[in-house]
Image 1 (spheres, helix red, strand yellow):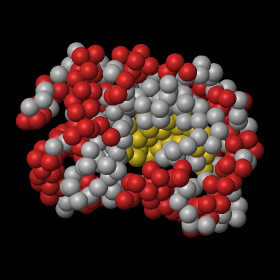
Image 2 (cartoon, rainbow, N blue to C red):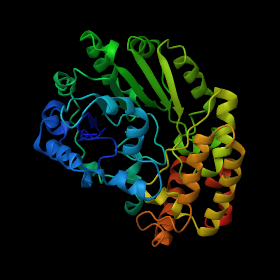
Image 3 (cartoon, rainbow, N blue to C red):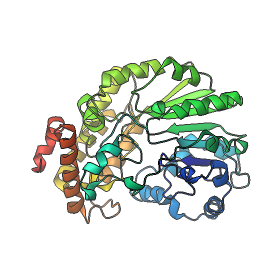
Length: 395
């Protein structure tokens, strides 16, 4: 929704939303959020949307919908912004109601499903991988990565366009390890904007502190989603051995002391590594966190970790497991049963996404190579965590 939102990527690039495919400006190259909001490129994107055209910058949503998965566009229209859309003509009165900011790629994890664009930890390890399997979705050349830090004044100059700002989403990297996050929030409080803003965070739940909680509680509302990928062995395989679920659960209980907290979701990214763990993770969330995970976030890229790279026989096994799991939760949790339906459909050959079925063998070979190389870097073995993968005969 380029009429109401602007998104800052951890690389400094600015796009219309988190699913945008092209930078419309870059803070690390001297631009500011306010300048980009008023640029010709941003206004052209608004014109395309107003004319019911799919801009090339919006192809991720188009591809997800073609694959039968929920897109960011649909989620915005149906859930998050339904009330705002109903009462406001965004086309006639463009104004920033929703900011989506990732201040940097600073992170304390190097997840297998991530890359150096979104994790500073990956900057050390990505060059050690074979070039053909480096997990860089946006083609960032580490040798040319800008060292220029995003400055606070480059962010604050968007505020004159934010008189109707209602939601500020902060991502990363991991937002709570980036010092600029609290500085920006404190500036909003100085300007007396806290009482109208709902803060939204996607956090890996590995970091909290009294200082963080003290700032958050001064805003109108705080929505938290916890990015956790599975039960303890699976999560640590994907995210790093030191990140025990027990520690994360304690941090989540700390966040729950916020008086203005509206807890949103435990949000795993469903990939080849955790898809068989979903039933066990569902049980863990209910037992330890007294909540349910949400399964709408399904990895579609990088392609080598997409569910469709798995051999057809193994996909059939996964489909059978998920179908049984879906049946067991349908009466009490129809929403997640619906998300599982989409994952099951994605596993089928007749549900195409890009060229994954046609070139599956090539992608599968890259998946195996990538998994083995990261296993070596971490001193891990996939078969210790996902013994079913022994059936593939390649590990």
